[in-house]
Image 1: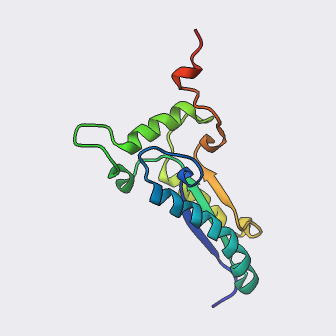
Image 2: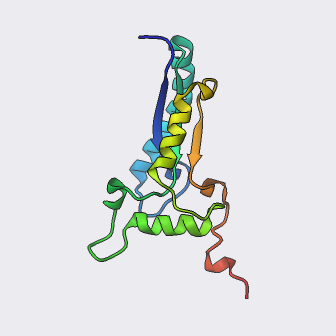
Image 3: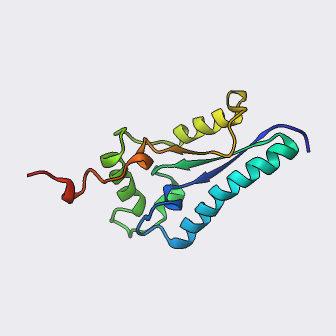
Length: 141
């Protein structure tokens, strides 16, 4: 194997937070993936000079995500997740696959040559929130 290079994997915030409707098996798999990222960062870094990072992407509409839950004529799980993210993330904007792709391009570039073992959140800042600001419990009279 040639020296150098980059490895990127994709995760989701369900690896560390409860996301009702997402599924426990997938959540634990994502948590394991993020742990493996740190282990492989050391092993692949030492042996092959390869950086290993994970991108934890926020809610964005994709064909795969749209298949989770919902019946014809009803909102899908991902549509609810997108609405929630826009209502609660510090940056109130849509998240696109290009946003995730641009971070992946950065992590694979020489600009990130010293970045390894990281889970980088691309979610408009939703991961930083402790409370759901759109919750009825947070509404002031």
